[in-house]
Image 1 (cartoon, each protein chain N blue to C red):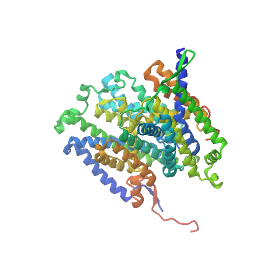
Image 2 (cartoon, rainbow over the protein chains, first blue to last red):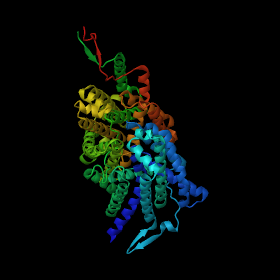
Image 3 (cartoon, chains in turn brown, purple):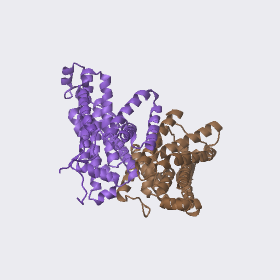
Length: 287
Length: 351
């Protein structure tokens, strides 16, 4: 029974990793850009929520709604004024610019908030659990997982049911031809990064409610997100959820065997998938 | 009518003479400089070696790795391992550090080459994390908290007594001087070796792959093989540098030896600021980096923030770095690899 419990906790943890990964997956899918500052942006969003909670006395769930448009704006501006300038055939500029951004952001947060670890205030809801037969599942992990599923359903709807989604897909396929049809790729890219940062804000809420965070934890979140994206296959959002679940299960199973093996087990699971299915479980037809 | 193909320019001949004088001064430095200067120079030289190898990978091979700390840490830990567990002398053990990094590089390349471009970058980072977590499990070398080199191993190190007698310094200072000279040898060998590699046929193939992989393949360059050569060479050199750095520190821990900031972020900044894809770039970059560090070291995180922002600005405004600006304006190449045809006269076919 304890194994079923471990497995379920792992799957729910996977929801958090899928939330970390969805933004990364979205941005990569549309503009082939890998944002090395993604993890640090998650941490930045967590601090933004924390500031709103402490300054305005909001509940974290209300604060996240306030933070979302702010993060959308930051993402939009970041893409429009900085990252769009790096999008050419050469892979070096986007990598090195986002790497520089990651280091700059980490240290700006360190300067602003010190290295002390923080946590969003919890209430009865965040510590509650529901009994499913003999197993107790935390309400928070369930909420996280449900949010991840909702985000992915929402993104799929956006992609395949709306005009914006059509523009996303067209620009992703061929930005030049799309621009002939009256689409401005620069603005489409900016909107995509804006949406990615809205998802980042949701991820940050659960990050901050479930565990402590400090300015240095960004890179590790980037790595988990990246592993989930690669395991799922580039460009597949449901694949990203499955990737997150695989990392989550590997980590909880690893931790159940030996607490020191938690992180290592996640990485090893990633390497095994890379060995067996180098293009991930659900690769896009052409890439 | 005879033609000659040369790569030398008058600037490069002047640079070679100036370089030779510079090398003599650097060799003689311990005879007149204080211990602080020697330690600073050791830092500059070892960072230069790391930067040259990262530049070889990213600037010439197109392989942007964020996992070089795997090889620094592995080289250092292998050196500590053979010294502590097998009683080897630290100096020759540095070579084993390089070999250990090379061995780790083989499976790393096998996994990472399955990923392209940006994903290769994060892939190498993941593997470096795996190596760090595995090494932290190695209890005989102190596990997560790390360990120190045994006192008698550092005291009886090769050449230390010789340097003590020759320069009349204490044993600790003599160890720093030994480390400095080894770093100087490593840096010169690295620059010389990379310059030699770039001027050979393989170097030409490498430049072709960097400029256009498909076109290079079409004229018979084995692009995959070039990637392997560059990756393994960099790993070996980075491992040697790692072992040497930790021989001088004499104390190691997984978090320090596998630090992404110290061994990869700094190195990337050095190369980007100096100028990626040139041998001169990292040399200029490491000097700028050291100057910035001396100026801003007291400001802690502001310093790193400045570096990050500076790297972004340079990448956007002058993607070929400071050296790129210099050589664009002046046409100066201190390590020319471009082949120029001279002698004879070009005649058209009607004559």
